Length: 207
Image 1 (tube, one colour):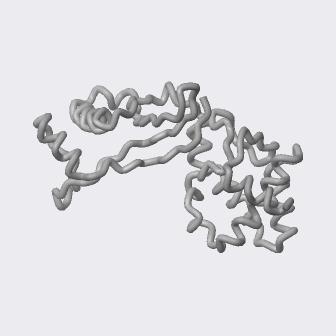
Image 2 (tube, rainbow, N blue to C red; image 1 turned 90 degrees about the vertical axis):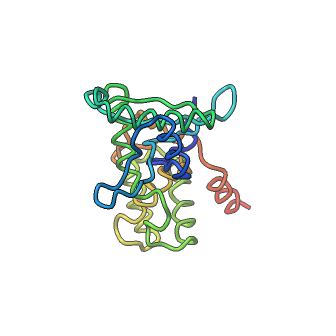
């Protein structure tokens, strides 16, 4: 099984659908405590995976084990479960005992750079940095931090810029890695796969 994409805090839209589910269950829909207006519910992770049977999506909510004894928490989880059931998508609860620390740490480290807007760089600059980084990561066993520092120096970038782009490539799934293995910048990064967009950058340079 290869994880192709991870989306965090996925909004359960349209809002009217979760409201209707809550009404059918005869339970209160989550609301803003100050205004009492209904709020959009979210699922912690929606994961796209490549399996032998094809590409599938899985929705997962992370909850501390002790919170599962709360009647109110269980009510909200039931709304969530029925929302995904209506879409034919696997949904489940993951406790702190089931999610690896490496996975949680990796997501926390790369998530702030998921969107290009977080980088304060132009699209052309991101492509240029991505090309240099991908070439080095794929062809050498040099630690990631050393590669990104060299890229900063080579392109005349402020220190840390290329490392932020590397985190963006990981968060946006342009670089596919084993998320259950801790990403350590001071160690080489093992890429399992590179997205077609980044691969095209490599081919374009060669051509």
